[in-house]
View 1 (cartoon, helix red, strand yellow):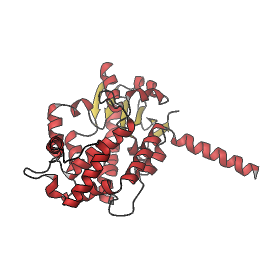
View 2 (cartoon, helix red, strand yellow; view 1 turned 180 degrees about the vertical axis):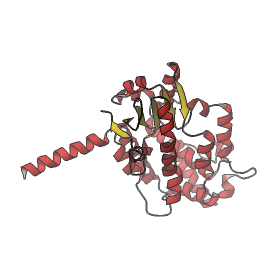
View 3 (cartoon, helix red, strand yellow; view 1 turned 90 degrees about the horizontal axis):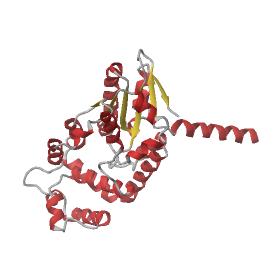
View 4 (cartoon, helix red, strand yellow; view 1 turned 60 degrees about the horizontal axis):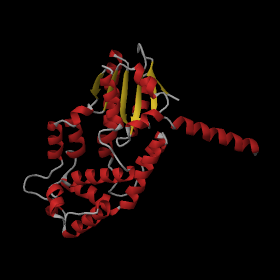
Length: 301
């Protein structure tokens, strides 16, 4: 009995050790020098980099940094205008013409709890009343995460930090995707009716969404990508859950695309890839795809 308990304890410790990593070294398959991939949380402060084992050495050893996007391009005037336009309803439409009066009441109640203000306020209505359901969904979800995170400095975030550090050292930066592509994925892939359903799912399942978001956040700061994936994969088992096609568009297809692009990038120069941590784990995650392609992928401890 005692031996069984000790064995179980060691196994559980090993499982935690395997999952509690955010940084991975990629080597083999003819690479002249290793590259690295680190999972990020898009609201994490840049200071969190210092808590990731091996992060400084990986940054020093790599000659270029790639993110999902080139972060400096994200905040350009053209990109900002493009994003704002993508989040809006067609000209002449407002959200109160898309939602019923009863649905608007539920939306306003949710916004009041989250923001302390709702669309009955003329100024906020002017700013957000023309947003599409998906635009509102994305904005309100982000505000919820920011509220949990506390004081978020948009000029001091982890994803941007890795690219800024590379540029400061005279190294190159690049993006695995373009802003145009991400806009299509996030805002152009659903019908208006499905967007509306998603917005009401956020509102009507506020406690569930809040709990899931907190689990994602805690898992990331614990450096546990397995727990993070489990939180992301939690289901309501109704139409609020992403369909397999939606899941593929948002996660799986992008992972496969990145894993296809990465070999050529790594063969040019040792590269630090910094992408959302949710893209790393699982059989369709980037780590598994790279291993299946013949690379050695090891957690940096």
